[in-house]
Length: 71
Ligand SMILES: [Zn+2]
Image (cartoon, rainbow, N blue to C red):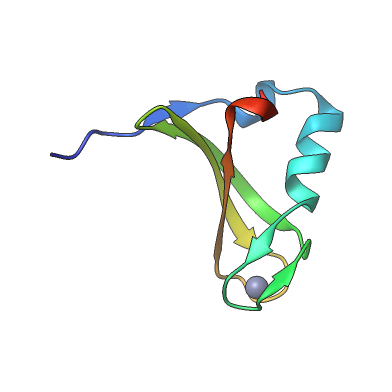
């Protein structure tokens, strides 16, 4: 069973929060923390909020999973 993701508006967050999420990333491809991401989109899937973007260094997809504590 696959549930469609529910899109959320990343840009509705306040600027400080946006900057934080864009900075605090983990890139699987580079195996490095906090390289940053560009072109962020935000969505919710199975009750979990994700912010997805492109790694600033390699351009691969990076995904940040938000736990309840974050929002
Ligand atoms: Zn990367």
